[in-house]
Length: 337
Image 1 (cartoon, one colour):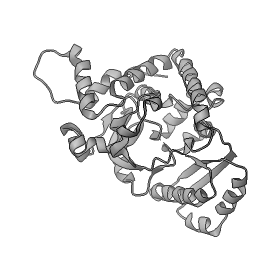
Image 2 (cartoon, rainbow, N blue to C red):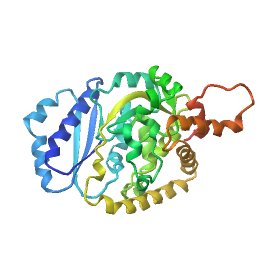
Image 3 (cartoon, helix red, strand yellow):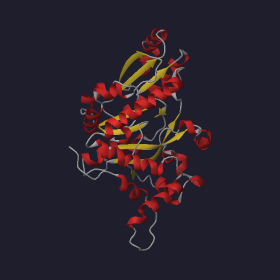
Image 4 (tube, rainbow, N blue to C red):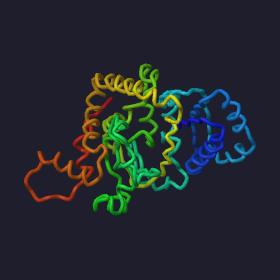
C-alpha cells in the first residue's frame, strides 16, 4: 500500500487508517504482513511521522498479530507505486494471497469473509467500489482528464436500482462473480504464487525506473487466464468497498506540471509492452475491451456487447444478456509459461 502525506495533520489520520485496514484483514488470517510505502512531501515531516510511529498509542493498537512494515521516503513528485512492490516479488510466493490496494480504499466494514468465499479459487479478484461522490461522477469529469478509459461500471452505484439493469441487479443480489479481462489496480487480490510470477516478469529495470504506473492492470488478468487454465483468471465480485477518493497522488503542487511528462512516460511503457512477443497481444485484447466499456453505463455496455456479438449470432432466439459471455471475446485463452 502506498500513502502520500503532505501535512503533519494527516499523519495521525493515515496511521489510524492503516491500523484499521490491517486489523480488518489480519484478524482473519494466521499470518499477515502489511507493507506500507509512506511518501512524505517534505523532510520536515519525517521526524513527526517517526515520532507518531513510535508512540504508545500506535504500538498499543497494533495487537492483532499483523506485521506492519513501513518504508519512508521524501518526494514532491508523482511516483510509481510498483517500485515499492518490486521489493517483495520473491516473498510473495510464500503467501496464499497478496493484496494490492490504494490507501483510500477502506477495509473497515468491507465484507472480507464474503469476498474471499465468493471469489473462490480465482487467480485475481476485485470488488465493486463505492466512491464518494460517484452518484455525480460523470458530471464532474472533464475531457482533459480522460487520458485512458475509465471503468465506470466498476462503481457499485451502477449495479443498483434505477442506474442498474435487470441482470446487474440479479448478479449483485446473488453475489455472483463475473469473469472480466481487466481489474483495476486500485484494489486487486492475487494468488501469491501468481503475483510473484507476474510481477517478476513485468517489473523490469526499465519499468521501475520511470514514474508512470500505467498498464499493468491491462496485463495481469490476461496473464492470469493463461497461468492456470483450471482456475478462473479474473473475477469481479459484486460486494462493495468504500473508495474515499482522496486523490493522494495528485495533492502536490507539481502534479499538473508533471501530467504531460507522465503521460509521455505511460505511452513509452505501453510501446515497450506492445513490442513484447506475448504482452503485446494481451495488451491489445485488454485495450479493445477498454474501448468497448470505458466511460459507459451498463445499458450502453449491453448494447455495445450485443453489437459485438452479432457476428457470432446463429439466428436463434434472443438470449438474456450475459456480461461474462461478452468479456470472453476479449480474454486470452492460451497457456502462458
